[in-house]
Length: 249
Image (cartoon, rainbow, N blue to C red; front, side, top):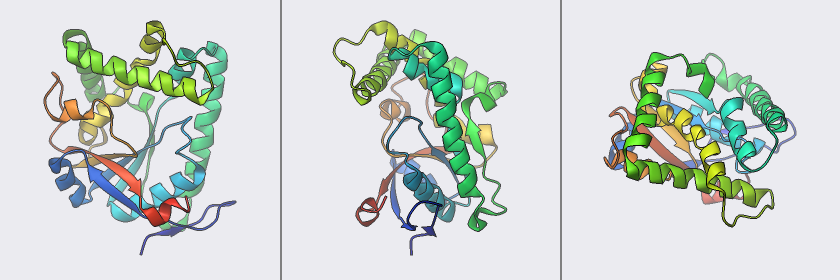
């Protein structure tokens, strides 16, 4: 039976998810049910309170250990600044949005079913001084400079993010200024270490990064198209609400 969870102001949720690995090797790691890192994106309508509550509860029931990943204010505000918002306002708005998510997660994790689980809410900047994080990020930035294919795909990923934000705010999406794409780009560099090697960052044996859609550069990272690759103990899982659950969340 899918886990049942409730949150003040929400209807009781009975939600179940399917998870599909990026590759067959990812599926092998997912089947171990060792550790999951649940990715949560601010300013994304998919991550409603109901959806986040359901996803976190499901993940905790299906993996031995879980942690939750949020961007930090510095990185998450880049997309707002890239779509025309003044810096001070962008930082303030991002801080408010992230606090909203963290307060909600704290309320969810205070429930009795999470007692003693030791679940962390991790932000990118928590690992800024971690030697392995620094090494991976440096490798990512070097790959961006040296590999034209990786550079092109990262810029396209940043372009899609900027375009999506413009669409969401009702702004013109034609002829996106390349400078705006560059402004949003470091967000990708900051998140990539968790895509590539969460096990060494969080000191776990195996880990699956869970998100609701594929990463645009994920295929290239798993299939050796770039100078950097995903480590053997890392997987990526695309979570999808089952059809019955989709109607409730």
